[in-house]
Image 1: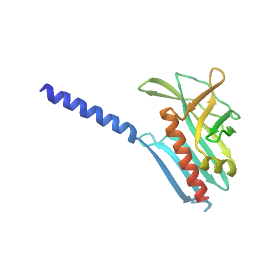
Image 2: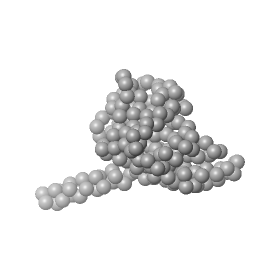
Image 3: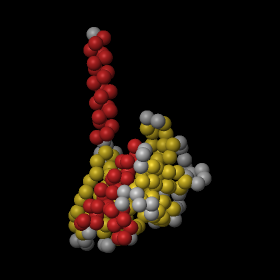
Image 4: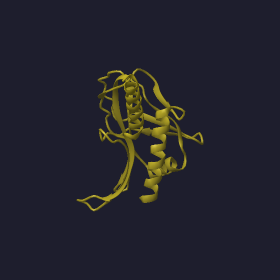
Length: 178
């Protein structure tokens, strides 16, 4: 009986571990807007269970929208107004400074590590910037810190690898299809 419990426990833990990695996927789509017949090319990295977009890239009417969700540990009720600076450092050392075009509103989420406040940072980027993102991998990202300074994500961190790969793959798809 004890062996069965241990085996069940190990199987359940393995299932949870594998499932945690399988809950995210990248959707690459080229569609036509049903009202305007305009071509819409998108590359979104989403959570399959919540349909929440973690990284979004979309080109419509010649304009490219780029955004990503960033979670801060703790509970905050702070609006990050449009115009906030986001910095991306590329593998060749170039630093791209982007400015948000929308207010980022707080969204509380609970996770294994506690409570987090998620923000969606959205920007409009030029084709030349999109091209740079499709040719050079990002090695570091800096977002506004809610206390002071900036909060960084490095390519050596797990989520850094995930986000940067999603941005790189999405930018390549957009450049190929716009």
